[in-house]
Amino acid sequence: QKEVEQNSGPLSVPEGAIASLNCTYSDRGSQSFFWYRQYSGKSPELIMSIYSNGDKEDGRFTAQLNKASQYVSLLIRDSQPSDSATYLCAVFSTSGTYKYIFGTGTRLKVLA
Amino acid sequence: DGGITQSPKYLFRKEGQNVTLSCEQNLNHDAMYWYRQDPGQGLRLIYYSQIVNDFQKGDIAEGYSVSREKKESFPLTVTSAQKNPTAFYLCASTRRTDGAKNIQYFGAGTRLSVL
Image (cartoon, rainbow over all chains, first blue to last red; front, top):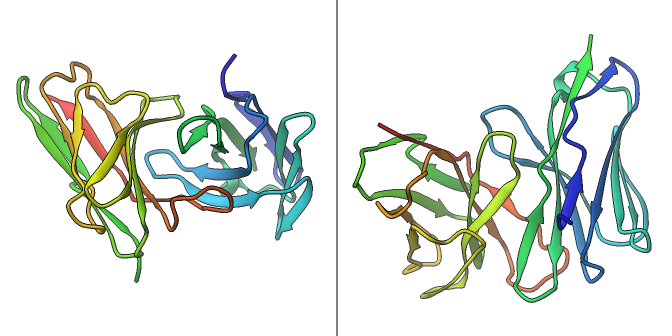
């Protein structure tokens, strides 16, 4: 089992729709959870961080964390073609070494 | 403006050659990291450093070496022992070395190819 799992996609949604991206993780001791957006050929940029159970909203983005289910998601409301990118889920692991573990990313396509 | 500067943006390596990727940050961050990204893959940790003159191996350290002589700088050398070096290399940093709520910021990356 991978430490951080994401569906690779592509996830295609029409412009204006809600895009839902999901991520599961295996380390129950994980404390911090991050969503990064990565455009093709570019470096990751932070979209959201979340540290406690529940929802966290920032503009059109909502991160949801459920530690009991080891599940974190990102909702993008009113999706725009400019949101088309790969979204990486990252988890800060407290097991053993101090490091961030990344999923392989979900490719999102917003269709105009 | 504060940030992480990686250079060069593109790098070509001849067989048997060592090459060094530069990473400099002016964010006054304590910890620095090197990742490798292959097409369609997530980021894999090569090395990280939490303090000057100290660093630890990540998941794929073989064929790579690093140094941390200054807080601002964390260069990565891809040695000739790394047989498949073609990838996108990303440098990152975090303000603190302890755990939670510690956001990782990335440089623009260096794309390494083999001639």
